[in-house]
Length: 446
Image (cartoon, rainbow, N blue to C red; front, side, top):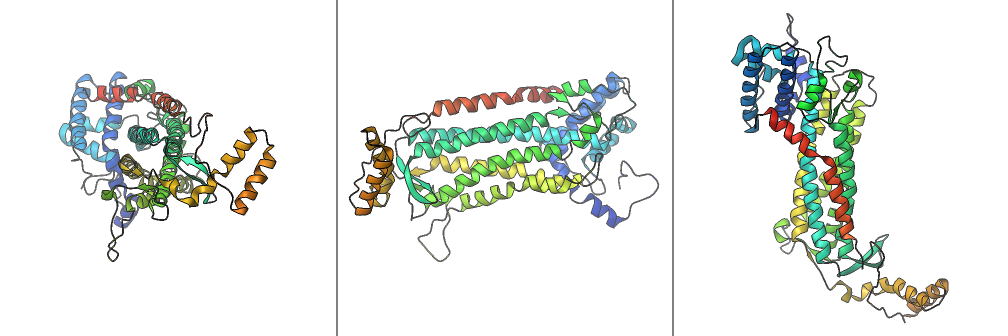
């Protein structure tokens, strides 16, 4: 059985070990590739300050690249008795290279090691979330343009209110994603700072070159103060969780609308048949299960910031084992949101719109405001026009003119989709993922 990095002469009680390790072996598999990347940068720096020879560095880098390839293929495992990903990587190096493998931990602690792993993992996941969100954005924009002239009822208090359009409805969710992406970009920039070299939170007596590891890993800058670098554990996850929750909130609201509009009582949209399920007893049913599950999953994701806050909000500065529990709720959240984004993109792209909604007389009264505005344009004071139309409705004399002539920015006749698309492009360009990607490829020798 492998000895733990911290273990000396006293062996820990097995039940204590089970409790303290918890799900860490499972969770650390998310971090394997990134632990290896962090080690590559760290040992490159160690060689530059004389703690490794050039030959030792060459051997270690080659072995780490092989381990990375194993992790990339999904073949990396944390063996029974090995505490975490850091221990597993060091054990694999020691088996291959002997004592040289034991040198990679000089100048760092598992504290700053997991910090850098989490940041490298998170920024890569943010890129995937950003890509998937941008894809959904463009699908919504296409649907907005496709159905820009198809009118539908707008609602307040779930009462038929005023004319809206599918151009507005699809476009509204697209613009919501722009703001969500801006939050994601802010979270990325806070995440993309290097904590490596802070060790256990108080630095090291070795002459570490933290600028070098920052550049090697493609971070924008470092977490300069070593105490703050450790204090960032939990804070980074919380900030990112708020950004994920913002996207989830947009998806949840859209899923609710789609489920409601797909029902027979509305009949505004038709979801693709392959995305609905049947009933075991009612042969006519086509249930919008995918969007219902999307709604539930996204509502659960919106609880993520609060879960992280409740784990961390009463901790003083310094490291505590409490942080380990964050991984259990944080690391799997990205895939859950990516699944929801994929499903939303698939369904919205194939969603069909009812172009004859307004033939139903139940929606006639939504044109009352249009009639009031027409009278005002003829010179009648607004309050008088409002009263006249109201009395006509009460008397059953109101005859709707089912046309709208909205021309101001962002209205039915002027959707501003080009402007919304330009906003999204500015946000996506602001991430600057290329620096991250180039650094990682350089470390891997690709």
